[in-house]
Structures are given as structure tokens and as C-alpha cells.
Amino acid sequence: MDRRTFLAVGGLTLAGPLSGCSAPSDDQQADGATAADSGQTGGSETAVAVETVVGGLESPWSVTPLPDSSQLLATERVGRVVLVDPADGTVTPVSGTPSVYARGQGGMLDVALHPGFPDPAWVYLTYSKANDSGESATHLGRGRLDVAGAQFETFEQLHVAEPFVDSDGHFGSRVVFGPDGLVYMTVGDRQFKDFGPDHVAQDRTNELGTTLRLTPSGKIPDANPFTDDPDAMDSIFSYGHRNAQGMTVHPDTGAIWQSEFGEQDGDEINVVERGANYGWPVADEGCTYGSGEPIGVSHADRDDVVAPVYSWDCGSGGFPPSGTTFYTGDAFPEWTGDLLVGGLASQYLARFTVDGRTVKEATPLLNDRGWRIRDVVVEPDSGYVLVAIDSPDAPIVRLRPA
Image (spheres, one colour):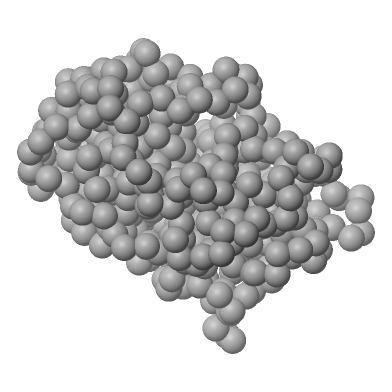
């Protein structure tokens, strides 16, 4: 596949009006346009080149480089895991993957490497899978990857976020390793609409609307916050989430940061704390679809919830945030420590400056491409930025200094 480079001249104009979550299936809005063959991309103080690494992927959901940068691992929501050669765009399907429930927002979702990869060569996947009744749940599994053979030599299911639900939405499904060596995994609220104290995200007897914390083998860590609470699931690390589809680790503090979909607007960036309640839906800054009525009360009106460090309040137009990462490379030194967040309906890559918990949006990137941005990651060697586009015929592109 040909690699095409586009010069993106830095500009200072902000993105136009945002199209927020305007339908209940907030992550299933119409796909954005495919990449143009020429033109300029404004939205950065630095001149940025946009280079196609690979094209023709089917709804890629996640991308992660191998530590030696020889290959990229990518998931396609339709049910595939592939290896991509970043030098020439060659795509090789990986065999031995689990079967998935690829409907609605479900399918093959996130991918993460064991911190010691390739020793051990564990690759962690999140995916949706159905039971015999046709109900679905978010799953976590891991396989031992033979890169040369493009196969999982073994694959084992580690955890199922219960209960199974008759819904095709809000699987959450980001997975990262924390500095403690434990696995953090997001689970969405599966689109339950009873916006009150009995909502599943406020009920700790189930795993919906949560961040889970597990050992690398899928067991429950003794230090989890609710292991001594008979009325709570031992796997829960935080709760009161709607549908977090972005998660990353702060490079200096080791804190877990998440991006989370709101209902109509109400999208959030959160710093995840042990045992904390993030409010959904009893405390929220968004509103109900169509009516514009507030959901619950503001976070500021309750002292038992943690407020987002950044939010798109009702009436703002929203953002629908997906994959997110902190910039830690050398290629763009002026971005060091900034948070990059992919926008779906908003169709741009947001860059936020971060000072402690003070988060401010900087000039956007890729705001003229019409791309729904699903995932973003930094290449370990080059410091370039990889971006996965959400479309049935999609590229993964690389941002580098022009």
C-alpha cells in the first residue's frame, strides 16, 4: 500500500462548531470522510506532516506499536487483530484470536501489551462476546503472541464484566497496565436509562459503569477498595462511569486518566482514584437527548462524587472522546506532557495542556479532515503520533514534524 505524505501547515484557527452526541447511540453516528489526497491541516502551532501508514482497515479500534517499533498491533472491530509493517503498510492477520460479538458498538476492541513484552509475550485484548441467550458482555483475555508466525500460541479468557445484557452499546473497553503492574479495564453502563440512584453505574453489586482492577492473570488484587464490602464486587476500582473509551497513565504521577462519553454533551476527562464515585447519572454536567434537561445535579452539588478535571457541559456541543494518551516523545518537544484525545463526532484530535489537574484545550489537530478519531498513541522510538481513524475503510496515519 502506497504511503502518502501530506504537509500540514500550522495555523491558529480553532475548529468549527462541534457536532456532539445527538443520538442515543453516541458512538454510532455517521462515519467521517476518508482522507483527502491533498490540502492543508490547520490546528497546531507547529508544522505537522500527516503520513498514511496503512489504509483499507475495517473500523480499527486500537493500535499499539511493538517495543522495537518493527510492527504495529491493531484491532478491527469486526473481529480481527492484525500486524502492520510500518515501513511498507503490509497487513498480516493474527490467527488464534477469540470469536467476538461484532454488533452495534461491540466487537474486537482494545489491545495492550504486557509491560515486559516480549518476555513474557502476553497481549491483552478486550472484546464483546455473547452468551447462549444472545446477551453480551465486555470480556478481557490474553494470548501469547508469536510475532514471526502472526499467531496467538495460546489464548485464555481472564474476566467477564457481569451481568450479560441485551444491549449492543456502551462496552467501554479500554485496558492499560498501571505503575503497580495491575490491569485496569473500563466497562460501560450498557446504555441503561434509569437516571437515578438505582442506575447500574451506582450499584456496586454489578460491574457495569466501572473501572475494574485485576492482576495480569485476571485475579482480584487484595488491595482493591471493596474486597471487604459484601455489597460490592471485589473487582471494582472506581464506579459511576457512563462509557469510558479512553484511558492512559500519567507519565510523571502514575495516575490513571480517562476520557468518557456523556449523554447529550457531558463528555468528561477524569483522573481515576481508588474507590471513587464519578457520579453518573446522579451527578453530571450533561443533559438528556433531545430535551436538554439536566441529568442529576452538578458534581459541585454533591460531596460524595469526584468531578471531572475537564468537561463539555450541556449546551457546549460535546466532543465524544475516544482513545487518549500523554505525549512523551521527542519529535514535538512543545507538546511534552500534553494530553491527546481523539474526537469522534467532533472529528478532530484534541490537545490539552496539563498542569496538575488544571486542563486547558490547546489548538486542535486534524480538524479539517472529516475524520472520526478512534485511537491515538506515541511511537516509542520516533516520538511520532499514530492515529487510528474510525471508518469501514480506514487508515492509520502518522503525525510527524513537517
